Image (tube, rainbow, N blue to C red):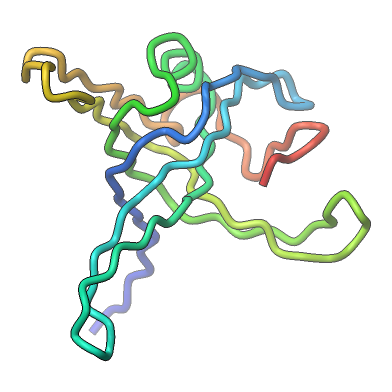
Length: 144
């Protein structure tokens, strides 16, 4: 049996802040954002609990440009991507791991109760096949 490594993350949530398009040190367009992903569960006492996970995401190239142009804080989107982990130093010089989701595809979902299904659009440009994706292309300052 052949073992295949897979790195796929899919989540639906709301964008946590207005999106700001920046350029990496290598001149690549980039947008970083947190995605609020809710999780409902039952605790050990049988009580229903709600948890909000803030998932750091980064998109590159044309996808980053489209997201920053058309999406804003609070918009509901589906994100498909790969989890990336890199070692680095925080602003205080402490060594730590930085984890985020490198966005490959998004689907833009209706954000409010007055929104119709015709408002749903997709931005399915893969970073693996376009925009010369470079792993860990970082800004001068990381926000995560």
